[in-house]
Length: 102
Image 1 (spheres, rainbow, N blue to C red):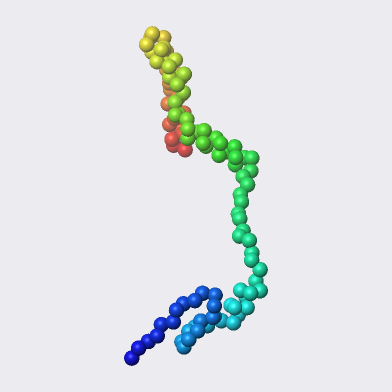
Image 2 (cartoon, rainbow, N blue to C red):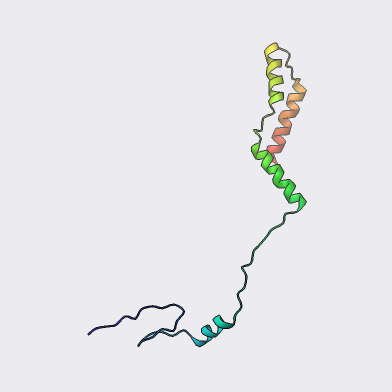
């Protein structure tokens, strides 16, 4: 027994026994349907969203350390003029504790 394999041809009607023909509805649609240009999506951010994005980018780029303030504290420690009152220290500790418990 032998089988004959037909060559696949795209766009043209298949010939030979056992060849699957394109359904008539699909053939008609390809002839009458106009080409539709591809759609594109776009997004526009509000001014608030743009500002938020800019602030976030600036925060990511920042080191998080106030270098001039650190230099001033180091200098004051080095020359012995750095002085923190106990009340100020207690207030700072209280604030940090309150924020961590919230």
